[in-house]
Length: 95
Image (tube, rainbow, N blue to C red; front, side, top):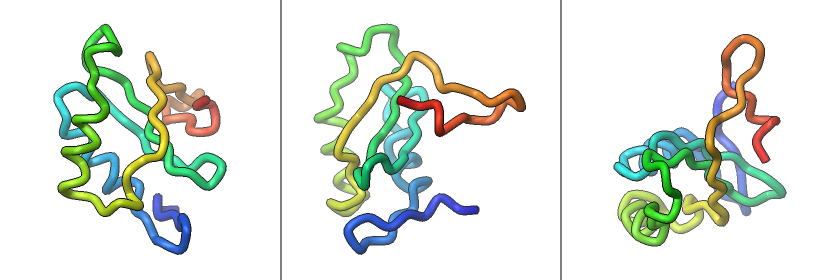
């Protein structure tokens, strides 16, 4: 199963979005998902203080590589990503 989704008639590769945002030094890791037909980015900050992460500047940088419909509508900061018993990412457990 790949991570291609369709939102508002556009086919979107979630991994492409993650790759662009993961380039930021302020982001340790991020996961892009669709929730309620909206693109959501879950972010684990590389800094201990979320205040230091300026998502506006990160979005502006991402807009240089991604089209407008690939920019997440919401950003959710997490302290860690939930895992299944097998050690894989548990996407269903994300808020």
